[in-house]
Image (tube, rainbow, N blue to C red; front, side, top):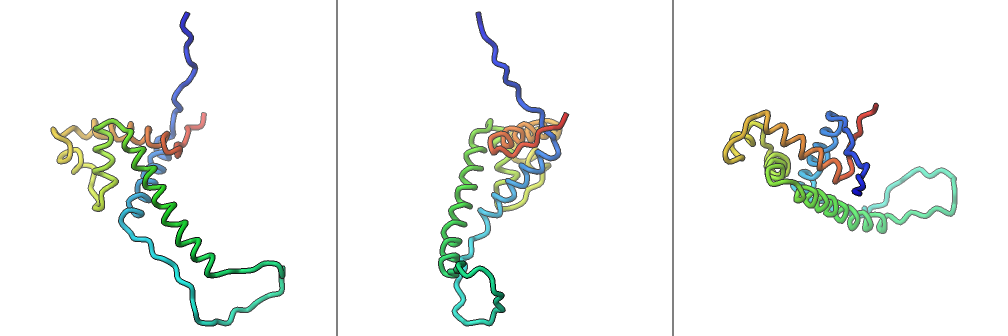
Length: 150
């Protein structure tokens, strides 16, 4: 006797999920194309008004800046690697679509991808079906899906 599993894929809110995936891919593109600028400590004294408050709170500007300069690039790198691994798990046509449309430095329109990047070119409706399937999978892999409310 065979036992069936009771797992069903969630029904996602298409617009909100697409917006979340596109936002993640845009963040990826920005992190890949724009260099991180290190913060530097100011060495000139400045007047700051101080109100009496808790006396046990200390502020170490240099330590905060050093922490930021180490943690922020590491977080960016981790995010980019996570997105690249997620895209790497997609089917070949889905991977081609996502990399050509969203992961290159220059912005490319959808019609350019389905007319020029696919060999042979595919129809617009087929392109959008592949795109939604890729977005659905990416949303689940990256855990940014928006489940449709019943």
